[in-house]
Amino acid sequence: MKVKSILLLSIVIVLINGCGVPEEKYNKLKLEYNKLVSENTKLIKDLDECRNGAVKLIAKIEKANKDKKYTDAVKNINILYEKFPESSQNKQYQKLLKELEKKILEEQQELKKRS
Image (cartoon, rainbow, N blue to C red; front, side, top):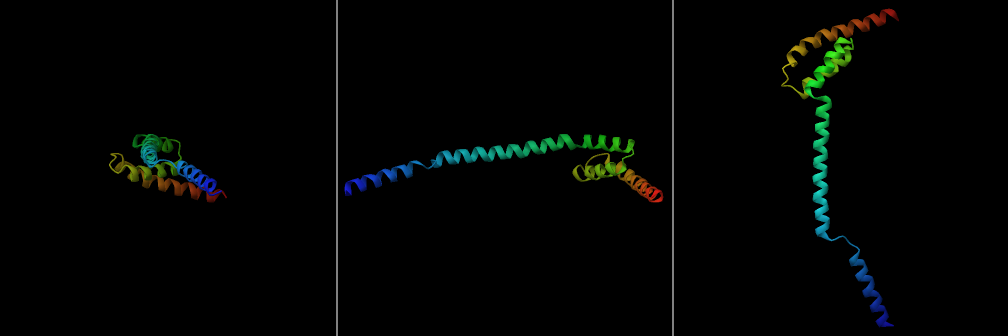
């Protein structure tokens, strides 16, 4: 009976030890995971730059102003100023910003008169 118990206990111990992931493999997978997370973060940043880069923002500002969507233009001017302070368009758009804010106020007053 003792021999069977010792044999059974030995088998259980071997099975438990065999179930774990080797540390070397774990470390390799962890490094690969960290690399992929880093690459994913960079790609998200690049995608955001593509969608909302300085050139795109300038185009959005111009289109919104042309379409008389002044709040959109103001929003994009502020984004341009925050994300791309080095943009040569910032000075021009800061002047335009004041004009747009006046137009927004005029529109709001006009809506109040109609109501």
